[in-house]
Amino acid sequence: MNSNLQVGDWVRSYGSGIWKIHRILELSDFNFASMCDEKRTIVFCCRFVNDSFNRSFTTECCDSSLVSHLDVAQTRKLSIFIDDNPELIAKFNAYKPKSIDAVLNARVQIPETNSTDKLEAALSGLESLTAEDVFEKLQKLGIEAKQVPNWTAQFISRGHETADDKLLYNFSKLLCF
Image (cartoon, rainbow, N blue to C red):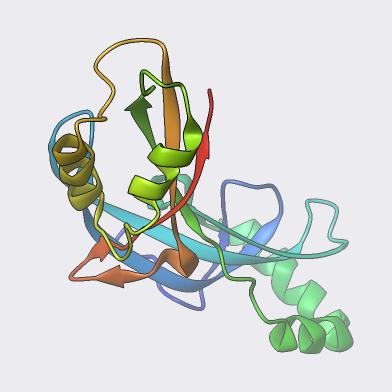
């Protein structure tokens, strides 16, 4: 993470425009590919204006590697714009960021019956699990994908809910692709 990033900073982010950081989330989360925990930082931002300096309020989150501070010229231009537009900055300061969910898509084996009902029933009780817990549960159920074709079990972390620096997921739905 760019250790200089802090809540309240004006930045450039993944999306175009000028953003303000409203939350920073440090994670040590399980990576299915490497089979170990990996540290990462998620930055949550609200966009103030687009690149043309038109009002463009929205919310996004992305990895900290995609976020950078404004350069000196951009900071000066933004300061002048804010001074010239007190109503707009007041509206922006009143803007409430949308909650953003995290999604974990886990490949699962298609049952021999090719029926979604039993598989969804088996997954429906899976709640408040870390990514590693999801992987272990799929293994215990004997449905982790070992070959193609397979389906996708989708798990959601509402608002990037965490415990002990790990996202917590609940089973959401089964995607038959």
